[in-house]
Image (cartoon, rainbow, N blue to C red; front, side, top):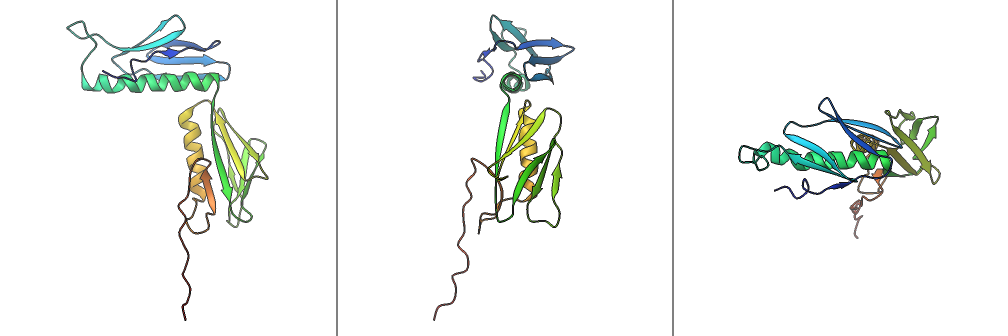
Length: 188
């Protein structure tokens, strides 16, 4: 029994879920998301809640196929993330540390100075936006698709990962860097 898959998903106002050609389509105030519906899963709306169920087996009970059981929780989690994305959205925050390291938003693009001989220009994918604050040392990545927002944040962090001696680089706001001691120096 999937504990995650059996939980009903509350449906906020102004959000609609529909199944079109084996795809889950979620529409809300922030946009529209589409995801393939895995085989063996059904999605039903019961009042103001969405329920994901496995197809019934020969014995009249939900399928006990290992793949269907694994997809049950995954489908529910994906649908829940889609509903959250189109209603409130997702945000990842990056912190930039280092002398001369910063980022600024020019138009839609993010322009970063992170110790290279040139500035790095990052173009956002669809439904993703950037915001900078604290003189460019804090970058916010906002969007409706959780996977895309996380991947964009990972790509930006990959430009200059934080190093353990001085802590310079780009890191997630909730990330802590284990600092190392430098050279001990000479002893007389």
